[in-house]
Amino acid sequence: MTNETVKLIECPRDAWQGLPKQIPTELKVRYLRSLIAAGFQHLDAASFVSPKAVPQMADSEAVLAQLAPPNDVEIIGIVVNEKGAERAIATGAVSTLGYPCSISETFLRRNQNQSLEENLATLEEIREQAEASGLQMV
Image 1 (cartoon, rainbow, N blue to C red):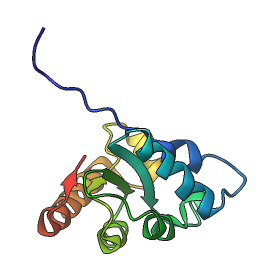
Image 2: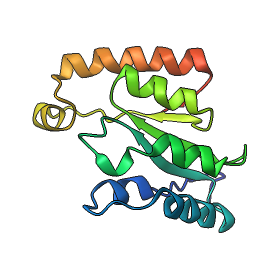
Image 3: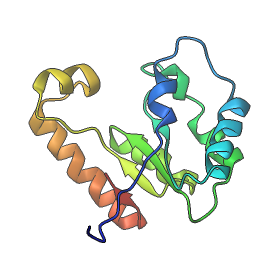
């Protein structure tokens, strides 16, 4: 057996964003707090994308403001462009920016309306924002 570690990331954001009925902000906060209380230290909890594209995540800033996560809990915020990265960074609660990257042109067109070349250029811009803000990136 080795001394390697495995990082478990709980991802309520992915489940929430596909639901048609809006989940109240307070309920999202309570759920995230229960995950933290249960011992989860890595939460993919927010998405800083267009509210028109993903209405369920329009309250990400409010959720994180109410959550006020402990410093030892990693909060991952998904971003698809520089504006989203700016929003995530401005919360002060996000410690890691998550960026969806794919080699599938079809996925990129449907998810981010980008070509592979555009996606890689955006990735570099967001990486620079993350680095300048002292954040991690996945």
